[in-house]
Image (cartoon, rainbow, N blue to C red):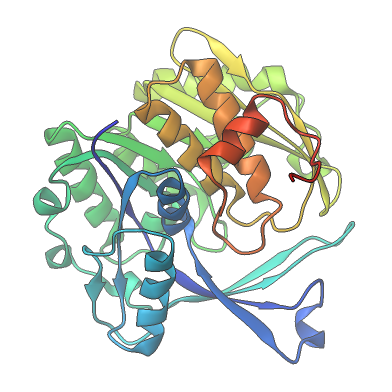
Length: 341
């Protein structure tokens, strides 16, 4: 395998009470860093991929802390732009049992949200690149970012770089109508589309039958039509849909579907006990990108990606800090969790 994977998005400071404390109980917050595309870069780096993260952070100590968090796990930070006044923040309250997790954003006016087209030389950034990944969160931050994402996608297409996008709809960032208008333009340049069980309905109005996401009821076979409709609408080469069955905040069923334009491939379903679900979709995206770069067969690719994201749910923080060997072992069926000696 050769070539670099470029990811583009915002890295934020994450502040979370210890354990399962509520915000109003906390007298201290644990500080870590994360963000959709940054999470993908970290995971890929753990698998030995040359992962390069593109963003903008303030030129002060807190911005440097975010960069250091990426460097610690081997991510290339050479294309990070410095400037602006503040790093975006998000607060996370971990849910338990029937109480859901809660996220509060404090990212308005962040360095990344104020970027301009002049901040990024995409031709230079994509030199030697094989893959470009972004999520729907990035254009949702507004300002010049929808146009900058379009510039990046256009440059990637012109240079023969494969483009993947995780739709990642966030209702706290933009409306469904705004998401649809912007993502329709961007998806024209996307080769591999990734969505969760609700994204296609939220962004493009393509809903699965006999599915109630809020009740945790997923009709897996209905997502064949969702994947096919997405593929036909945008001519994607592959569509992947992660399928989360939420029994409670702690207990989830986790699987995925991959459609390659000809056939549908379902992964096995894992019944997982959630330690931290933030970054679960990003870890799936990273697993799928790795599998595609290494020319895995479709069934092997979706099995690898789901195994990677299954393991992420057992790790605190945004980043999926697992090795290639650990993912491959789980994908092959070693799911007992027995002590390794």
